[in-house]
Every structure is written in C-alpha cells, then in structure tokens.
Length: 253
Image (cartoon, rainbow, N blue to C red):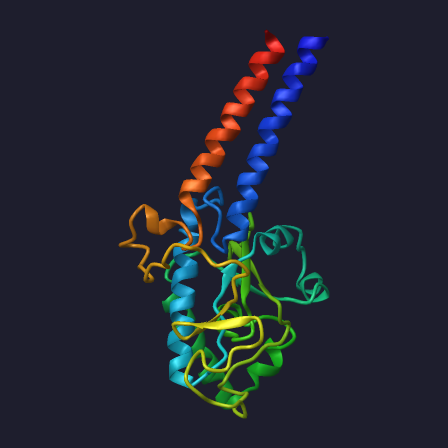
C-alpha cells in the first residue's frame, strides 16, 4: 500500500512539471511545439506569414493601428468546444474556417479578390459582420490574439478564434478611418514593432532582441521567442528532474 502511494506521488510530481512547461509555451505567444502539425502544416509558420501579410496590408491601406497577432492557447481550447457559429458569437470573438495552415497568403488574396468582385453587385460586408469572412478575419486590425484547433470530419479542417474584438472591419468598406504610417497610432498597451502594434511586454529581457527571421531560415535558437530565456529553462528542467529523481530514491530507499 505504501509503495503504491509513493508511485502515485511520483507521477503527480511529473504531471505538475509538464504543466509548468506547457504554461510557458502558452505565454510566449507562439503555438506550442506539441500542437498537432501533421498534414495541416506548421502553425508557427502560419502565424509568421499572417503577420507579414498584416504588415503588407497595413502599408497598402495606410492603417496605423494594425495589431500583431500572437497565439493564445485558451482560444484554441475554446475553439475545440464550439459546435455552431451562434455559439462563437455568444463568447464575443470572431472566427475563421480554414482548410489548413499552408499557403495563407494566396488564400487571403483570393478571398480579397472575391470580396471586391461580390461588392460590385452585393453587400458582403453585411453578411460577414454577423458571420465570418474566414481568411478576411486575419486582416482585422483590432485583433491581437488567435488560437486554432483541428476539426475532424470537416471540409475546412481548422477553426480559428480571434480576439479580443467581435467587430468585422475592412478598409474596403470602412473608409473613414484616420490614415497614417503603420504602427504610428497603436492603442494603449501596445507599441510599434516594425510597423505592427505589439503588446507591451511587462518585463523586458536583458538580452538583445534578434531581428525577425523567416521560419525557413531560422536557426534552432530563432525557433524560440525573443524573450524566452533558454538558459533559465534548461536550468529549471534540470533542477526539476533532479528533484523528482531524488524524491523517488528517498521514497523507495
């Protein structure tokens, strides 16, 4: 009986350590490495390409308040419990159905062309404001967070939730905004980061922030967020493992 109790205690400690590691990935604003990639593509590369297109779109339309999107794992979890479009609207965020994480730039441009063509004879804005513009949702300036989940048995396999805004906005219709250079009119709590409005970090890293690197060229170090202290993470994991091994040894001694 005592031996069984000790085994369960060791398992509980291991689970706690894994939870701490997961929370660190969530706070970094980058999709966790454990997130399914499979045939759907790479969510981290997807996020990089979306932000690159948001910056391009902000420059083309002189949008000075385009936010940078970061990954929010809570939104991804919420997406997993969504069953209908109505249930998305009830939680006060926008959503987008997508096929996968690949070729997002091409799909955004295709959606923009379709929107412009339909706008000649119809009013797609009225339709999308109460539902979803799918890839167009990735260009709404007010959004700063995104989380996606794979949906089985669905033609468009990904459901992404975007927040914090529940407003559909596009410069193709909303033309009365104050124009300016990208990143020059960020909301409180955001700061200009190479043309996009990024959330102000509460604690600044003592290490210099490296220049943005394309995912195709990034080194092993560049796969981690700029403010992610690799030395402290390695030390923490070593200390955690040493603690677990020592504890188990003492219990079974």
